[in-house]
Length: 295
Image (cartoon, helix red, strand yellow):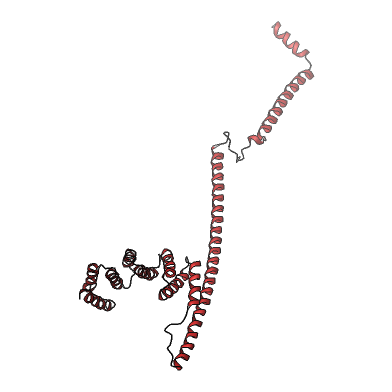
């Protein structure tokens, strides 16, 4: 009882102002702690190094979403540059093709123009021959057999030598070589024809004409082996329109080289082969040769 009274007296002795002052001091401290805590939170949340925005630079601290986004961006960048490079390559390729076609067309036009000029010289030579031949016949003098095409044929030969890789030069080579053969200038003809067979492999008809002419030159030079080899190549060309004629030429070379027995075998092959309208005349010639050899 005395203890209770003492407590009440002590409380009663305490001033209300001092009690309120202590409560106010505790509340101020609590508010101060809360403000400091909030400031630290805001500072942490506003730190750009810890921002939740996607960082395109690879980091081990990135989330799965950031890693996936980073890979997608890198793939898109690679595909973009690949597409750009592909477009550039296509453009350059197209420009290259256009330039090549333009150069090729320009060169072809120049060759055609040069060939036409030589053709004009050839035509003028023929016209001059016809005029002279008409005058000769009026005067009851012997007429020349063929015109003198030496100038044009020399130009055709030079044209072919300079442009042998071009198809337009192959016809010039054939014309010049035929002229040289008719003039017994076999060396000039052979030079053109040997070069021609090397460049005209994709043109069977040119190959047939050139190799057949070469076979005749080799036969005239007594080089039977080379002549027969050329004819064998001609015989194996599927596009050969006159295979029987090739065989007949082979038989003639064999006979003229002194191999009559082989020539007879080839002639019999021609005669016994199934006849067509184009081969009939060749078979008749083979019979004439066979009778001549066996007589």
